[in-house]
Length: 485
Image 1 (cartoon, rainbow, N blue to C red):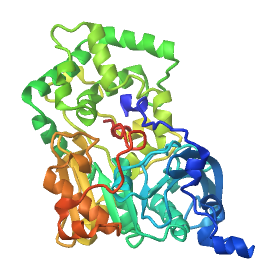
Image 2: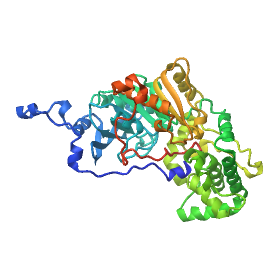
Image 3: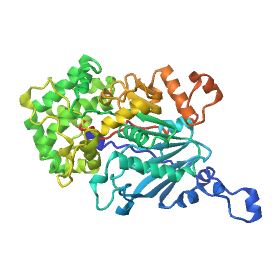
Image 4: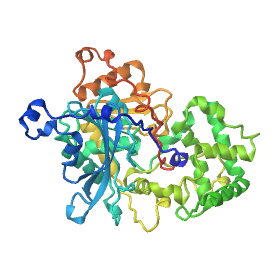
């Protein structure tokens, strides 16, 4: 996540009147109140209902107009196959609207934001939203950490237990969603627990079925955008390696000033090359074709201009110990199940590349054992092709991660793969061409059980049920480590 490590997604919290927030809460019925008896479970305050779930405790409640928002701990077994091995506290958040509305289950696949935010499907269905922090991302990490219990099945089982606990409170339809690693997470959850969700919306979800075969990425970088833009980016990337000596001196000064160390990756030289080799990938992942104008001319650029461009797009702190530490769970999974792409650099002479794309093993402390499971992704891919139901995959045309997408097979039903033209890692339903946007919105509404009659009759009539909220719905591109990109 290079620069992304510093650009983590953050939502602005709007502090509203307590009375406004309370309006979103169910209250005891008049008949019950007159009778002097206790409120029915359905009429109890939503906070009381949530906290009545065994293992749930309150961290914080934050007001937001029209909603109740809770940050909670949920007690999970370290090992779902053997609960006797201990438990840990997993953070979840609940954006509560009304128990009569559908619920969206969101995970980024990383840490959870503790500020109110609404994902696109939540706005579309005008529903509640439950968000889960992925296991082993702090503070949702067992202590001591048995890293062998960090895998896609254990994480899917975390979601299954949360869903099972909350379904009694939110009995309407459920949709799972996530972007990038979160989109992968939503897909894996569906593969292992296909009866939980009523629909899945997976954004920009990579599908690295065969870890050692990555030619799709090379083909992507040979054609993405325009030749002019590709040449400009490639030239800056090459120049940063040609000028390695003066720029590494600048890097050493920067590291000393920021207190950065490089023990995990094995030295500043390795970290420098890793950041530079991320440069082109990072641009296409997070920028648009129109941003090419901001790329300097490598032939005339000063060292400082080259440094600034690489730092802005890739981020020189990404491969320092301080940058890697928060993402150890991600790199562990990349090196044990998810896979990691390796690309070639035909525009850079071999004498300038000392290490090439380094594997995830290089980004995880050596005292954590890792062993790659060859068939984990193939199993998920086969399941999507043969058994997927009510799933929507959305990709961005210019996003490198879309080079290896999920594909459909004869067994997949009411499932779609759409690509948003010109979009990057922030691709969404709103960015699709008109007919695909309407179809995707209509299917999400239908899966959630809230499609109006007009939409059932004509998908072209589909639109989000909730109004756009400038605080709740404005989001940056999902930013996380790019398996280096």
